[in-house]
Image (tube, rainbow, N blue to C red):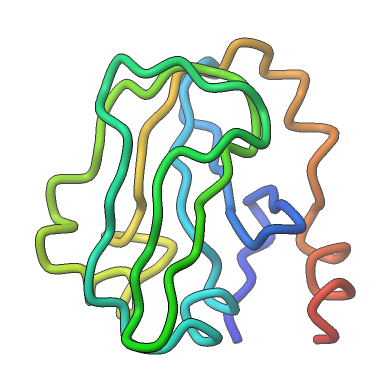
Length: 127
């Protein structure tokens, strides 16, 4: 199970990676989440320009057996939705790379400190 050390995590199994400019970040679901969901067949996300509160639903992931809500790790605005998700299986194949979901402009970058680091996330999922 892959859990990169340079990301922050939520208890709902989303990850967030701060980009170089310090005010934007990529968000996706963890390797653990995609593994638990099984084959992902469809991803539905709110459009660019949507303002989000922390923990607000910003979309859903549909797998063969279930549909799961996606929760914003921090408050911000969706800047971009990953166009590669037309082929939803990319989330299973590369959850931390090509399978990212949205790029957001973060309202308060300091809020990332409230999220789990890799060690705490490993503990959460029993790794």
